[in-house]
Length: 82
Image (cartoon, rainbow, N blue to C red; front, side):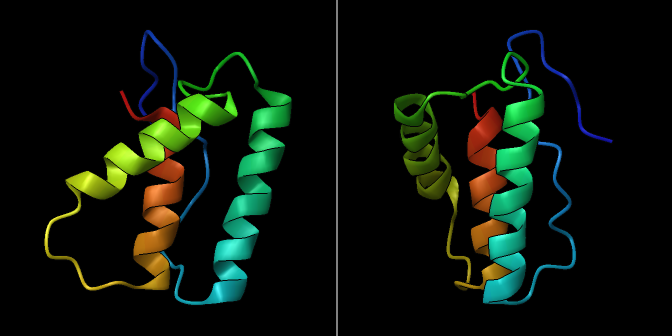
């Protein structure tokens, strides 16, 4: 279950089994749906906040092998990055 933060939450999207480009596209579409349904719940709901958090999320990745799974994790993490 996704932890809800006092200041907001990340998108409620499952990324555990993501291994392909098409699955990352599905994650992005699920994120859009989640944002549309719960715009006040996201920590980083505006484009500038999200992109700033995405950059910070990528900076936190240490020596990880690039993969579709990692991409999906970082995209979702950025929606709730504090």
